[in-house]
Length: 88
Image (cartoon, rainbow, N blue to C red; front, side, top):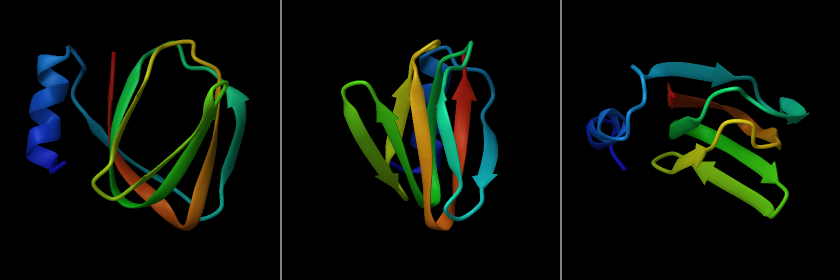
């Protein structure tokens, strides 16, 4: 998905203004939750999200959404990751 289409979808789905987030190569976040839902568009790099029902790996152009209070862990690829994220 391209950035313009993603921004339009965020607005349609009730997400706030998106922000760009970057994470360092090989960074990991142990299992945690957020008190907000999030939707991301990966711009560069790779992120893998582990949830109860499996692992989702996203690369440039991929999107992923996660509901509030959903337990998950994150693993960043060898080149780090940069993504656009909207929260609601």
